[in-house]
Length: 499
Ligand code: BES
Ligand code: MN
Ligand code: ZN
Image (tube, rainbow, N blue to C red; front, top):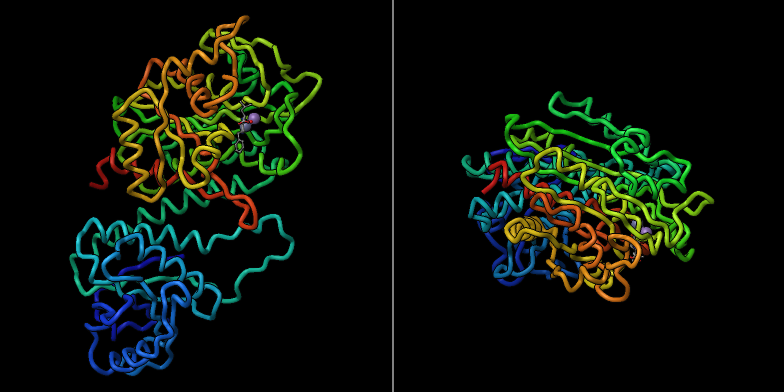
């Protein structure tokens, strides 16, 4: 959808639908009380009938309101005045956009509530409402022969303010919001594609296509042969059971001077995880096409960096493979040697994510990173611990961890930190190799991070376990695009584009 801003009074807006926010209770708020008497009185009369309610009926459509150029007026419930904030507006606008997309309205305008006075709040509300809106408009029908799209989709939203100074803030927020939403859409599309289409090769091609969009972005993909030469024995062992060649995708975005150390994002790109010889149960195994959501979020984030031309250097690394049972697949008890030289006893072939990530994390060293963040659908245990709402966060640097927690909080893409220490790390001791790839019963998310931490000692590192947050199962099965917002908020802040 296109997003615009306009500085004018509500009465003058020529639109198919003017959206006015309304609070619960006696005082509906400045959007209504600030209007001239002609449109205000019929609106107040309609509100008095009591049909508008936040939960039961969050919107009320009025036609032919006198004194307005708008063809329709949509009254949008914003809940109670005292609990109103940026997030409330964004989520209410998600509802409004979904509704207008289904009816005959092609363009709409929102009178920005005056109650959002502070610049930061105005910025957040605007950015969040674009993200919420695009979420509602998202539709994955690439693989359906009959597309069931709305006949008259909503194509344009204008944000209206009476204050010229606010328009600049709104413009910046719209730009950021669109880029973040675009990154999420790319991540969702890749993740929703089935494993027979979205293979490691497909991910590599997508990265190369991104690379062609900008001279600031260089995309390459290492072949198995090249990985062999680098000694990536852990990564390649996972791919041995698959007929699709593994790829190590590398995206280098140069937005700042060459000497500026990059933030390196490493995303798990397992395009299908059957578990290997330690095969998974068949119920819901289809969901393991989502095991590349970490990698998809890295591609989405880099796309957004390119779109915003952020003045920062960012490197994306996506180790990509399938994990399948086969005569040549890893067997429990096999010992492999990682690029770092550490030997690993594979006690469970289904703990493959850490095996492909560890070599990618070693590869990350060559970029002299300011920080490395890996993003992975790594453990079912994380879903048990935090459910589908909160991403698991672990790492070796308190400041970096705090930075990511705050970024997630700020953009409504929350994470929560889990502890990590030698007591947990000892669960990975092996009788036959330097370490085992599983840590036995208990603390599965933490022992997985402990495994990775053996390969990240040379830099500041954080790990995001998105097993629960990257997609939804059940009726609303589909990818969420998380944690693109969290990563982008962090990069916007590091590159001083936001306060
Ligand atoms: N991709 C899975 C983790 C996963 C499970 C993500 C469920 C989302 C939902 C990962 O490769 C895996 O299989 N992990 C194992 C590790 C275990 C063998 C130590 C797990 O969590 O069961
Ligand atoms: Mn697995
Ligand atoms: Zn996996």
